[in-house]
Length: 326
Length: 145
Image 1 (tube, rainbow over the protein chains, first blue to last red):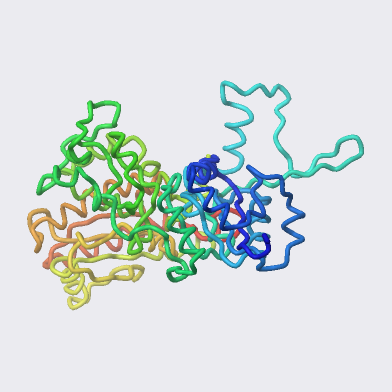
Image 2 (cartoon, each protein chain N blue to C red; image 1 turned 90 degrees about the horizontal axis):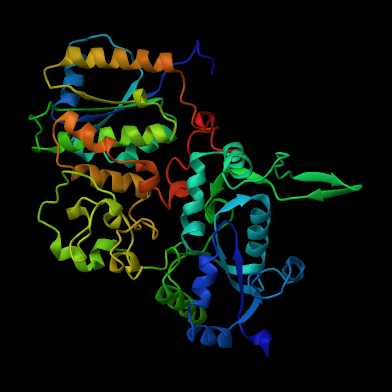
């Protein structure tokens, strides 16, 4: 029987597991999905191995949902394997789509990341100073580990991607719509982001509270101010990525009285979300004098990390210049 | 490319109303200046999307100049003020990407300031020559670039 149902695979790469959770969070709806498809690979939940996937004929999986960015050789290998075996590959979630939070490591490189993680964090207990090596000899055996790269990549840097399911993690409605579209064969053109092509502000309930001319006199961080639950965050002087971010996320952050952080990525018209937000944000700073502008700009603690929080590896520059990483 | 034979590649976004006309004046007056700048005319410095600047660096520019009307003189009232704010903020962001702020310059050049345009081009070229090539390409990690 199961041969008749479309085969579906899930895999995770450099991610937190939240996208796996987003599948489980479909709650009762997951039963409909499970009834309609045959899950052939899902390491986080089911006991299939890589060799099971290798044994499948090419293109025999109807769709693979791959979450997480690619920053290690094992992830590259698995992404390429699933690409070979699948008719459709969906980049599932912000990390596969844009690089995501782990992609912020592109302001660093392998050696500085290792130094932090294996040597200098307060909780590290590593007296021998051991670092993971691609090859280690032990008792006459040669052990191998996946290689860690300097740079985190979005999935489409590594393999051809058919669709993008944006968000950190994607909203359940987006997942249900995507799965339904795939099952019914009603898919948009290849390369589409499976979410509305309008900005987060477009749906925002606070949109009406935005003054005709937004002007920011002082930039505040969310913890520095008691946020009004009805007023536009930008009008309150708090950085909100809404204007440069795709909507359709369900506005869970906004409803939780937190500004948009940009996980849905840019709309179709924009390549570089961070640059586009920078452009919009600078234009509403209420200063025309060079000194005043400088003061405002200086008060933004980490502009690159804030504007590119989810999209650094898929931005125009992709990473900090390697030679400049110290 | 060795430092000695390095010729800086500069991109200049010049506003139609002041700086492009200023550059034109430098040309028609046959002022001699460094030929390193490639000029792109835009209607206003406020039209310069930060994505243009990033793209210029990404595609091999060693320096990017934005030049427009003096404060108060913008043909569209406030485009140059927006450019100034974007320039300050983008300079800080470029620093975080490991691109020196000296590589991204904002200048006010009016339609009558051919001499100033000549000066800016010469100075900027020499400044970038001293800094050396940006060499962004080939510096994006050892994999998949």
